[in-house]
Figure 1 (cartoon, rainbow, N blue to C red):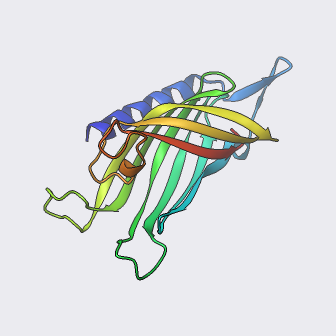
Figure 2 (cartoon, helix red, strand yellow; figure 1 turned 180 degrees about the vertical axis):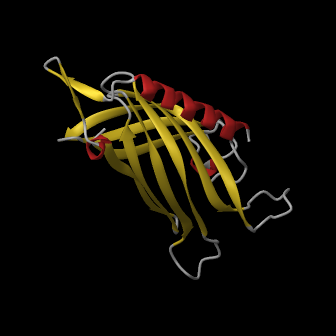
Length: 196
């Protein structure tokens, strides 16, 4: 609940920043309005790994809006699959899906600050809960920074280091924490964006 309140506060602040912006870009001293569609950008993450008979698949598209030259916000979708590559395997498979909101601020041409909130439908893996093994929701609030590099015309590759503030026991990111599922809740993410 605290993370939802924090996210709402950040969203209100971003609207305040937008209200103070002239909503245009300066070219040769002239301010001209930019069409809504020209402020949109897209991108996302794609992850895939097969190791020791297990497969990991992640699809995470984003749709963003450039509030100003340095600040953007948007929505994201998420689908994660983790399970065996062989149907005769004793391992179980897990599917996670949901969506979220994000905000990014460009500190310099290559350095970004990032905040993301996701609400994901997951399988309850907490043996201390009353709904162990059933579907439930997991709140994920990620804060961090990233590096962005343009690799083609308006196509950027981005590398983020993100801290999971909530560290929910059912977070699908727990097994991707850099220091292990019981370590510091830090993940890395590599993604692409087109237009930001």
